Length: 164
Image 1 (cartoon, rainbow, N blue to C red):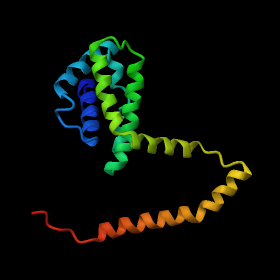
Image 2 (spheres, one colour):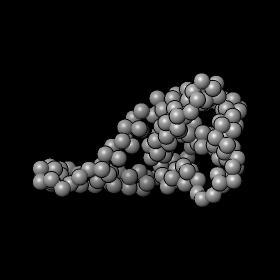
Image 3 (cartoon, rainbow, N blue to C red):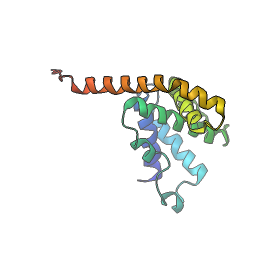
C-alpha cells in the first residue's frame, strides 16, 4: 500500500467510524492536502515502506464499533500532535488540522475512555492504602464483569429478526 493510499485509508476509516458524512469532510480536498503533507515529510522515501504500518494494524485488533472509536480517537489526537509541530501557516496543514479537530470534538468521550485505560495501566498497586481500596472494590468490579458478560450473551443468543 502506498503512503498516499495509506493516509487516505486511515482518514477514511476515521471518518466512517466517527459518522462524518462526505459533506463534512471532502475526501478530494483531503487527498490534495495529504499529497502536500507527504511532500513536506518526504513520505515517498523508500524507508516508509519498511516494517509494519503505524496505525492500521492497531485498529484491526479492535473489533467492536465503540472499541474502534476509542483507538481511533487516540490516533486522531496523535495526528494532531504531529501536525502541531509543522508549519501551521501552510493552508493544507491548517485544513487537515481543522478537519481532524472536528473529528476529535465528536470523540471527546472516546478519548476520555482511552485516557482511563492509560491511567489504569500506569496505576501503581504497591502502597497499602491503594491495595485496601482495590480490595474493597473487588466484589463490585466482579459484579460489573458478570453483568457485562451476561448481557452480551443474552444479546448474542436472542433470535435474529428479519429486516426485510
